[in-house]
Image 1 (cartoon, rainbow, N blue to C red):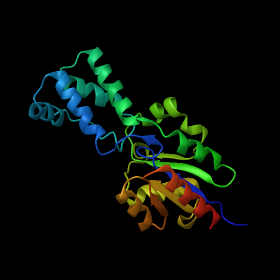
Image 2 (cartoon, rainbow, N blue to C red):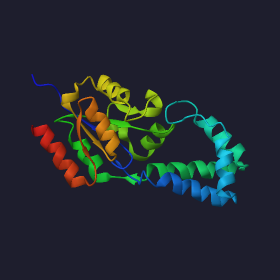
Image 3 (spheres, rainbow, N blue to C red):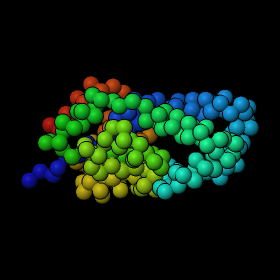
Image 4 (cartoon, rainbow, N blue to C red):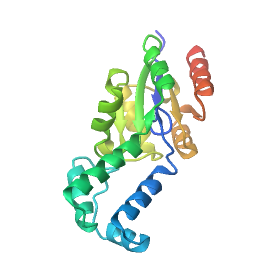
Length: 207
């Protein structure tokens, strides 16, 4: 019996429409303006806040926001607004066409997620997009303790899928992440637009 094939998706810039190269600086700039601080002082306060590394650790989201609020002298309402604005910027909007395409793959392949992430992303993205109704497993860097393109990120995803690299096709919008996958034997496509990605996935499944 042939091995089950898997399609492994990134989230930001793939399943979510968001500019991964711009949103973080845009968000910081908005809050620099909101606080009335000059950017050098704003950055210095953030640097001195001893923020936990929420991209590779779980369970520290509340500490992150509490320390950031203290560093920037934010009132509770402003801190809540900053946090909400972060998640709106982080999550962007749903790439509905690609999400529904992934849902349609269930009879032909397993569908999973491997994403660099921030602590709290699972809850926020589930609330907004319901990823768990489609993808299993969902592998977040803040839960696995390692970011792409570290080979350990892909190997942990392979372990959780119970798959060999040759049976997995990876979709990501960053070249370094596609190259990281290739280094462990996973083929993939650098996502730029839905039609090309869908065609590449279909070709992989037919191969």
